[in-house]
Image 1: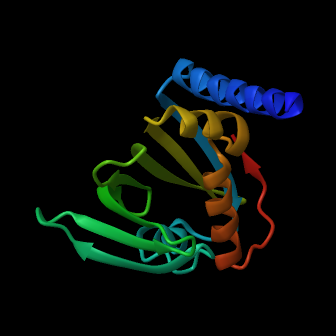
Image 2: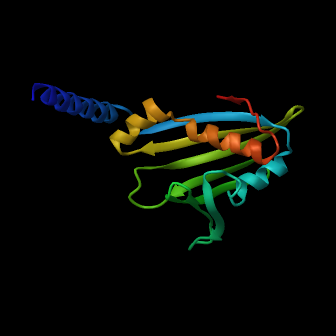
Image 3: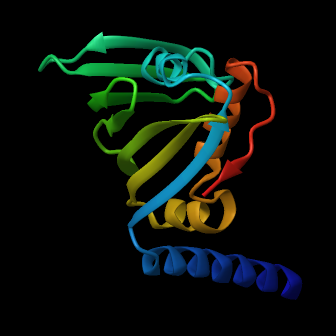
Length: 171
């Protein structure tokens, strides 16, 4: 019985620490990742701005027009979740900004993709400007998953889709 009380007490303490730390972390963050690809900005922009079916975690992706004429990207992911994004800014083939839209989400924000050509290829830089409202998710994003893990996964998938299975990811 004593061991059970200790385990329950430890579990409660861990939960309090996770939630408390999550509340102390800022809701807003900005994170950036980049990689160089052996492709032109036009080629990479087509992947970034178009349907995302080339990403392994995406089950289905489609572009559509939103109610106000804006471009909308809808994704169904293999984990069962669905995401909807608004393309809020684009400058072919230099940049594109995609913003999460939806209600009652534990997070919101945008990704801005910048494409800069150079002699070695094209640098794709993703800048995430986001808010995480749920303190547990904020804790997990900061200490377990990392703010950049999704961007890293995206850049690796972009490399694989363009025939470059190994990409060097930088800040």
